[in-house]
Length: 164
Image (tube, rainbow, N blue to C red; front, side):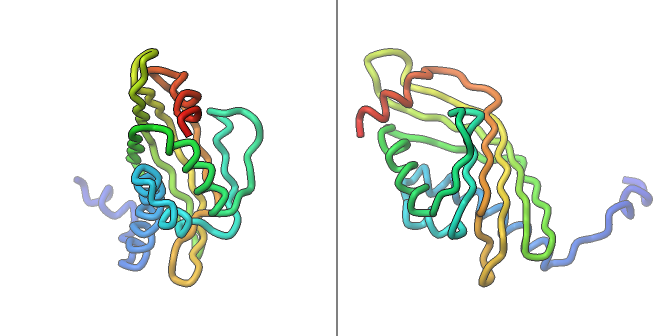
């Protein structure tokens, strides 16, 4: 690497790097706790009110929800599947004081043993989280999921909901 390329971006402080890591981990934990059905741990990642925007998948309008309402909704939705796996990658984090934005790519696989169609539905796209630092912790106050592709059995969500 040339000297000019190395000096193009100033080195970040250890505190800034630590903040970026904490933000990325908070966002990753959202997926991990949902997949493991760890609803209490999931609730702890969110601010008192969260703007949840899954309109690219479901239509409608974004919703302002409490952490409990999110956990209840995701438990009802994801709980009907035999398994889910939400992979989060390519995380980019920008911080500005006590505010942060994390963007990432995702791939979410949903499995349900079914007599009708393939047992898998996989969805891919991008997430955008907005977070605020409160009491030394980063809390998610906005989640925007943008689905850009899907494959497999698109009827699986309806079938999973019927199992609950």
